[in-house]
Length: 164
Image (cartoon, rainbow, N blue to C red; front, top):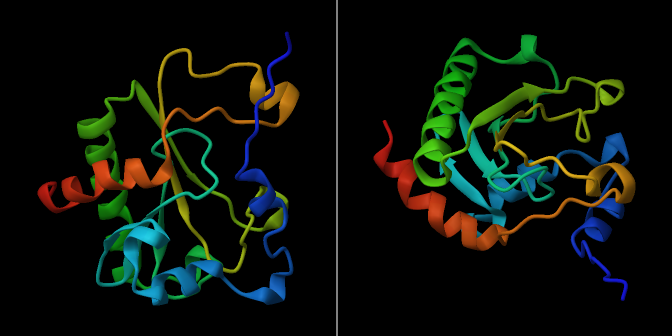
């Protein structure tokens, strides 16, 4: 018997805006006012934290400036400082709630470097566990995620208020 895996969320990603002139969907999410629907976990003075809607692993977060900026040099000193503070906070929250064995953190600048939305830079925080690699991403371009994004949002959101 052959089992079928249906990564239902991939079609939304495949059909999402790819035109660089389309602007940042992050700006729309930030303006929506519905943090749970937008998966926004924390709003800071100059930056915010959001669950990645197309995650590599459960708990994949992103830290972004509130304004649309494509290059690190365009960030203000305050934005850079708050981004770093939020990266530390994200790691603490994920460690507290999900107890990963490690983290990948990084930023892709420019389309050639893998930036899906090069006009609005964002840092990725990806929790990792020993043995979380499997053949699915390699042979089927499919990520197997054991938890729904909204369920994870409900687990992470209250912890952001507790972690200083």
